Amino acid sequence: AKGRLSHPVAMDGHAFDDDDTSSEEDEGFLEDFGDASSRRAGDAGPSDAHGQYTSAFVNHKAGMDGVDKAHVRRVVDEMSKNSAHYRNENRKEEKVEAKIREMRAAHARLTPEHLARIQRDVDARVKTLEKKRDVSRTWIHVDMDAFYAAVHTLENPSLARIPIAVGGIGMISTANYVARTFGVRSAMPGFIAKKLCPHLTFVTPDFEKYRRYAELAREVFREFDADFDAVSLDEAFLDVTEYLETRGVYASAAAADLRAKVRAKTKGLTCSAGVAPNRRLAKVCSDMNKPDGQMVLANDRDQILRLVNPLPVRKVGGVGKVNERVLAAFGMSTCGDVFAKRAVVAALFSKSAFTFLLEASMGVGTERRPTRALLPGTQVARKSLGQEKTFAPTADRRVLERVIASLAEEVAGSLKEENLAARAVTLKIKRATFEVTQRQTSLHRAENSAAVLVEASLRLFRHETGLGSVRLVGVKASQLAAAEGETEGGKQTR
Image 1: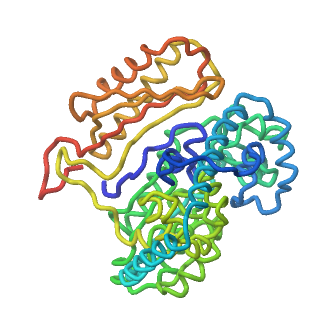
Image 2 (image 1 turned 120 degrees about the horizontal axis):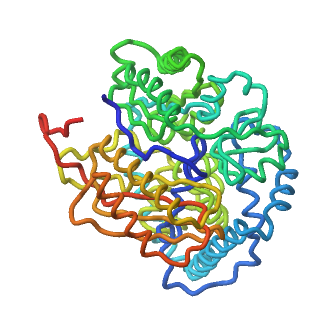
Image 3 (image 1 turned 180 degrees about the horizontal axis):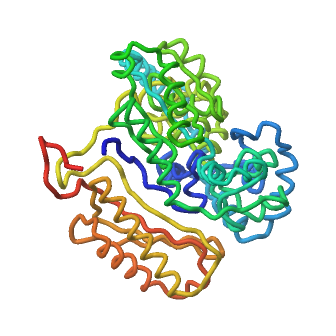
C-alpha cells in the first residue's frame, strides 16, 4: 500500500499524545538549542519551577477556550506539589534555568560590533531564503479530532454526552471535548484530571481499533496523494498540488471534500485540515479551526507573513515547552519576535536550531516531501522508531519483561512495515519516582527481526539491578537504514 509512516505508531502514555504537539522535540533541546557548555553562568533571577510546571496544563488547546485557567493551576498545584512527578519536573526545570543563565551570560558578553557582524551575516541569509521561497506547492495537513476518544464514542454513542479520557489514573493520552471544558487534556496525570472533573470516565486504550479506523481514513488520503506521509495514527501530510491541477479544483474545495469523505468512510469520525504552501504552515493551519474545520493559507508571501508574524512560537511544530521557555527568556514569544531578534538567535543558539527558527519565522522551508532512502543499507534521515507503555508501578520483573518483549515486537513490526532496520536498540525505564534510565546496545548488523530486538532489549533490562518499582518502559530502535530485500526499479519493494 502506498503512503508511508514517518513516526512510530503511538502505544500508550503521555509521550504519545494522539492530538497534541509532541514534546519529543524538546528531548536534547538543551544540547541542540544553544552550545553553551563552555560559558560561565550568570544571574537570572529566581526560578519559578512550579509556575512553569503548571503552565503546561493551561496552554491553549482546541475545545478549552472557556476553561478557568486559574482554577486549573490551583488544582494542579494542590494535587502535584511534593509528588514524585512534581519533583522530577522541578529537576528538569532547574536544568533549563541553568542553561538560560549560561546563555544570558553569553548574551551579556556580546559587543555591539560583534552583534553587528552577526546581523550582516544573518541578513544575507535572509535574502538567500527569500530568493528561494517556494509557494508553488499545496499541502494539506489532516488531523483527526480527538481521535482515540472519538473512536470509542463512535462505537458507543452514549459517551458523546459525558466527559471521557483515554488512559487511566496515572496518565491520559487524550480527552473528548466535553472533558476539555473542565480543563482535562492530553498528557495530564489521570488523578489531576479526576480532581478537575470528578465524574470523568476513563476508557481503556484499544490500539487495534485505532489502527483499523486510521486505515479507513488513509484509504481516503490515497485518493488525494498516493504517497501521503502519515506521521501518526491520526495525522498525515498530503501534497495535493498535482491533484488540484489535474482536477481543476480549488484547495478549499479539495480539503472540504477530503473531510467529508473521511467522515463517510469511517461512518462518523471528523478531522480538521490545514492548507498551505508548505508542510510546517499546513500543520499550523489545521489547528486554527478545530474541531471539524479547515483553514486555507493562500500561496502568497504577504499572506504567509501576516499569519506567521503574530504566531506564538509554541504553535510551530518542533517547538515544545522547553524551547518556548528558553526563547521567552530572551523576549521571543512569537515568530515575529524571533525574526526581529534573529542576530541574537544566531549568536546564542546552535547552527541547526538557528536555521530551524529563522525558517519558521519567515514561513519558509518544508515545501517538498522529505527525501526517501531507497537502497538497502542506506542510512535514512529518520533518527529512530520506538514504543513505550505506562502502567501502575510494579517491581515484578516477570511482568516488566513481558511488557518489554511485547514492545520490542511492536517496534520490529513497525520497522518491517516501513522497510527499515536498526543498528542500535535503546531501553528506557522510568521508576515510580519518575527518574529515567536509558541503556543502549549496538547490533552486529542492521536488524528488524523481532527475536533479535526482544533479545537485545531483555539483555539490557537484565543488567539493571535495584530498580524498585517501575511505571514506564520503552524500546527504541535507532541508527536506521533501509532494510535488505528485493528492489524494483531502484526502489525498495513494499
